Amino acid sequence: MAPLEPWEKVLISADFLTSVHGEATCVDCHGGQLSEDKDSAHTDLIADPSLDSKNCANCHEKESQNFDASLHASQAGYWTVLNARSVPENHPALETMFGNHCASCHTTCGDCHISQPDSVGGGLLDGHLFVQTPPMTRTCTACHGSRVGNEYLGKNEELPGDVHFRTARMNCVSCHTGAEMHDSQGADHRYSGEETPRCTDCHEVGGANDPIAQHAIHGDTLSCQVCHSITYTSCDGCHVSISETTGNPKFKTDGTYMTFLIGLNTRQSEERPYKYVPVRHIPVDPNNYDYYGENLLPNFGALPTWAYATPHNIQRNTPQNSSCNACHGNAEIFLTADKVRDWELEANQDVIVPEVPSTK
Image (cartoon, rainbow, N blue to C red):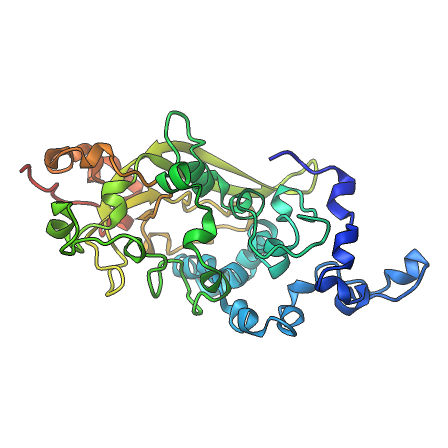
């Protein structure tokens, strides 16, 4: 995605003035003063009115009703894991860290429907016109790029893009509906609550008309991705700090590498009954936030560092579904103890596969 020229980021097109949203005056949404003088006009200006979803709720009540509790807006998923690994007295330091390095991922209505995320330079999507369906590569994968975007679009070297993109050019909202984006049911983690989307929303699996016998055989034992994902990215320790040169937040990961590993599902529920799921290494270690204080994650081992994953690189045919014994008896593709570093073993006991399924 080519960067926008500075003037492209802020130029309001004439088309906007004739649109539904253009019927309002600038001050209706942005505050400020109706004045020909720039300084006066910008007094008390609100750069992003959608930071307060009530401004959008004036017209879009249904979409805004639960948006503030959605994961995109609340970022509750981050705090679910930070709280588990830390203690209350460390919260002030972690909140400072979070504000410097994580809070920019907070998403407003405008970040999807009016402008690009700040992480890719910001700027209007289309001359301030409100875009009903967010453009995938300028909004969705601008934030979810290093893993989801690269997997889905086939940007990982020698690995094909997701079959839904390659064959049908489906975009993110083909599966992740507006209802899901606007309301995550107050979830505290992306794998909490109802499993949406589900592959079976579109694909009949295990029924009388399903020609694939393995679907019925494996039932709810395997998540779909166990058989239909391919190699994906894992990362090690993401260490954050503030640059002494620029004063800007920065981060450095210890390593990025390609994996495909099947582990045990630590988030089993009625919605996610699977015994086996793909697992991805989380770029976390006890010293991630040392810049902000010592021992900020004293309960680091409370959560695994290899975790349930849903890679966005689905293929009909994969190495592990080429035959029964491409998976059964193949220790190489299971997360066994020998693949976990010594200091992570205790935290990952519930994810590690103690015995690889036997050959057929």
